[in-house]
Length: 171
Image (cartoon, rainbow, N blue to C red; front, side, top):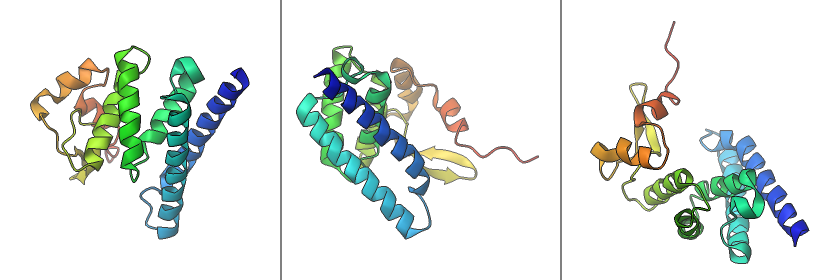
């Protein structure tokens, strides 16, 4: 069993590494690169669904911190597999309630799933685009409470978060 869990951890970390390498193609102008990204995330989403069937949510206790974060990343990017995202959200929520997973990661996944469902997000973690050089979040349910809600789950204030996405000032 320990070998199986070690192999699962390595598989999840490998999937995240492939995701990071391919993520540059997510918004490419080249349809072939976009298709490659979609195929990769679909394959990973399918595999995560199998893992959740066999193990539930892959917690840090089961697979280690790095592999647990990898599972979260895979769920985040399963944008065209709402059934997988919703299932991951439910399982991750149970683990957060038990103190076995990250409330921060849950907040990001909750926002991502809500945006993919066409609903308003809660924490302002999902960026819709850029206007006049400033990143804009997808609509939020309660924008006045957004930073308060972000703080509750360990996410920096919105302005600090989006500053990372802003282009560097011209010199």
